[in-house]
Image (cartoon, rainbow, N blue to C red; front, side):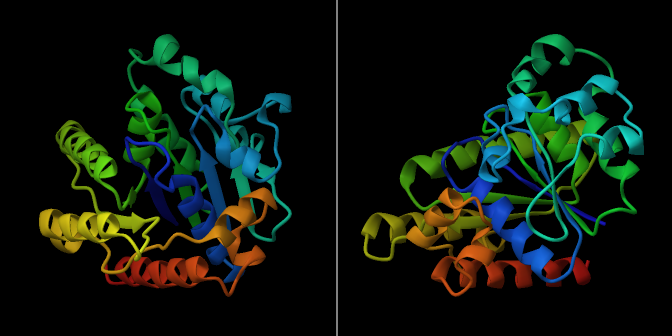
Length: 258
């Protein structure tokens, strides 16, 4: 099983879009995929038409157990309308975790234990993070073997990336773990000098940690979210899906090659 976390300490950079699109592409390849929503805003849950506040169980309940069993996790999953694509939904109650449990021993590893408990059920787990550093992001980073960092190609997003990289440094020391990560330039508009300058700055600062291509601005991707469908199903021939397909090929080759 492969576990990817999609994270950035800035909102609006394409985290949920990246999670859903890659998940949809993998599911279309016949992989069993679990998408995990750890954002109290529950954007990914709503993406699939799931009102998490009406659910009896969610990822919040996984955290409440502390040491979740396989049955604990499976009881919280939601199926989607798409074959092989499942969701562990979020709820607003997640916003209370830092206050309630942030100081409890072992709280940073709950999600890792949960994912390991269902390792024989899924080929891929992709975790969508909130844009703030706290127990939820710490869990998501500790649980994964690869981190994807979507970065909008504009100046303020580059500043947000600096915070994210500092967080990875701290987490690496705390967990004694070397993170494998890829920075993914998103919302690229080739018509603007600002986007080109931001991309050049990314490459100059982070080198080969930056994916060599970009995810362009694509209104079809936005329409897919309104239709509550992964872009790979809603607009499979769009520019955005073409680029995400190339990104997936790059990521899976890296996984295969270690």
